[in-house]
Structure formats: structure tokens, C-alpha cells
Image 1 (cartoon, helix red, strand yellow):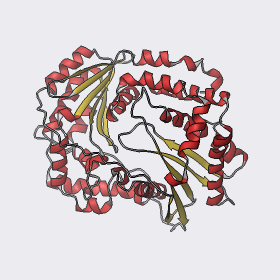
Image 2 (cartoon, helix red, strand yellow):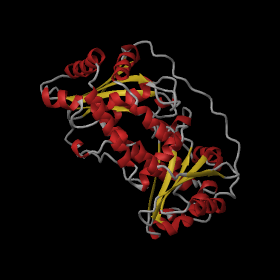
Image 3 (cartoon, rainbow, N blue to C red):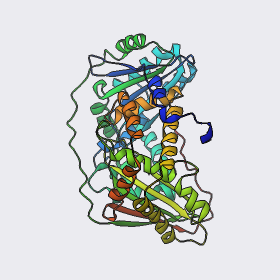
Image 4 (cartoon, rainbow, N blue to C red):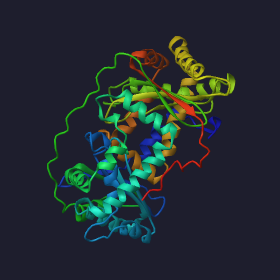
Length: 452
């Protein structure tokens, strides 16, 4: 949306307050939390089950097991045969899928509202009664290995980011890829997946999010009926895994068939632990948007359009996670320009902010874009459920959303300049370069694997 069409969105937190005013939550006797966001605009509902378990909870030797178990969750129970889950959702007029991250694993269905009870029955059934059949596992692990080939091994950019994480993090489990190392997948067994399921797939390690044309009291009653009879179980203690302080720059090169070189600069950066008192993660979010948040952002304006040093340049920073944070600058140099030229240009843009700061007009425009993007994201029922689920997954609450937006609005130009000076230190930097090798002339694999 063009900026001239935005209303005074610096006053927009009230819009989010309205959007999130009615979430209701309860916790069942077995420890399962249920959160409901009523939205009467369409006769549909989104039903999501989130497990507080992701790839960061794995151990060496079984990397990828969280994602493999996500696949196995569609392989049936004594009551619902292999592949039958998807068919029942489709027959109900809905769609479903699942996703695994470093921090969580989640499953969802988007269905007509009157089918919500049926979805709860299906999810409650596989929460405790999954059949991990060795024959089904043997087939599905091949699917996951092929997914790894498509998404990572045959995708030079993905391979570069995988190696970046493995280099930037040496002790913290974020060093391992979500999909797992191929050797671990090759040696994984059905017993590994079953042990993961038995340990972590319990109601007291999960929460349910429902958004849509529903009544929260009725949803709570359905949750008690379907999920309430499942027994909770003590969870293993999770030991804190802290990444040691980095004491010097690290640099890697990945050689792979590709058309263009890619450069990534990854700096260790803080993330939000206390939404009410933390300051720097908000300023870093503003900084990321000033550099790469819209068409007029600095990287696109100066490096791509004006100086033509980069074909593309961007920023990747998320200020919420269970583990440590990274602030990535990345791009590909234009024809006739080198990776060294691009690195110098990216560093120069940070140095400009360190020296001269940012203007009030730039700051105001960036805040408006961030708030507007948040409002538009919550315009969909699925977006609302995702927002709630992700906040819970990283230890926050939907109740913190207003606080986070208010704190974002309080960021000053001086705050942005201060974090630019504080965190872009070479001692906390990992540099990754994709060195393009000649293409083999063979058809390239699809970059995205077909899911369930």
C-alpha cells in the first residue's frame, strides 16, 4: 500500500488492541492451554495445535527427528489409517498442513466452523495414539531425505545459510539444520521417532489456538471433551545451552553450481526476553526495516538503484526466539562488481548510520510501515492464530503484542544509532560467501519439495 494512503498509523496500536481485544484462554486440568480468538467475519475457523518442541531440543545423532515426526503424524492411529487424516480434512471442506521450526512444531486445519469438533477429535487422537509403524517410517524417511536434497543440497543459497548457522553457533543447538544432517537421517530409526513422540507429545507440552467464527465457551467445552481426557506426563528437564562469547570473526566459503555469488554477514544480536523492559531488540527491528523494510529502504535505494553495486540486498532479523539471535545482511553483487565490493558497501551503510544516525522522517515512515504490516497481517484468521501461536512458542503471550508495539513506537533515532554502534562488531561476525561454480547443464531440481 502506498504510504500516502496510510492513515496516521502512528496512532494505530488501538487497531491492534481491537484486533486482539477478545482472545480468551483457559488451561485444562492436564496442562493443555487453549486460546480462542473470536472473529465473526466469515463462517470458518482455524484450529492449530502447537507443541513446545523443535529442532533445538534434539541431540547430536538424531538431528531432524522433530521434522521427521511431523511427517509421521500423518501416518495414522488405530482409529485413523495412514493418509486418512488429510482425506477427512478435505472431506470436511478444509485444508491442513504442519510445520517444524527450531522452537516449535505446529499442525493446523482451516475448516468450516461446524467441523471444529471433528478436527479436535482427530488431533486429540494422534496426540496420544500415533502408530509409528516401521514400514511407514522406512518410506517416509526417504521422503524427508529427498526433501533435504531439494531444499538444501540442490539449493546453493540454502546450503550457504546452513553452513553459516553451523559456523556462527558452535555450542547452541541452532547450529543444526531443522531438516537434519543427511547422515543422521540415513541412520534414523522408527524407534528414534517413537521415543521423540512418547517424550514430548503430551498435552502439558502443547497448546491449542482457535480463531474464527466461534464462541470461546463452546470451544473450551469442545476442548475439555476431546483433549481433556488425555493424561499429562512429566517432561524431561531442559538444560540451558548457552553459546559462548565469540572472540573474533569467522569466514566460510561454500562452492556450489550457481549463477551468482552470494554474500552473507551475520552478527550476533539480542532478541526479546522481556517485552516490557528490553530496549535494543526494538531498535534493531527498526534498523532492519530502515535498511530493508520497503521500496525506499536504504539498501534498495542506494546499493541497488543508485550505485548499482548489488543486484539484490537485504536484511534478516527476528527479535523473538527461544534461542540466541542473529542479524543478517546479505546480497548478490551486480555484474562487474565483486563480493568484496558488496561487502564494503554493506559495511558502509552500517557505518553511515553509526556516524550520522537516521532522520526523524525516515524513522516515522519505518514505524508506520511496521505497524501497518502488523495490522494487515492480523486481517486474516490464519494470521491471527499464527501470531498467538508464535508468541506462546517463544515464551511470550498474545497479551504482550500491544506492549511490543508501544515499545516499538518509543524507539528514537538515538536508539537506532546506538544499536548500530553496539552490535556490528567484527568480533561477533560470521561471513559466508557462495562461490558459484559452473552449472552442469542439467535440469535443476525444484527448490521446494512437495509436502504431505
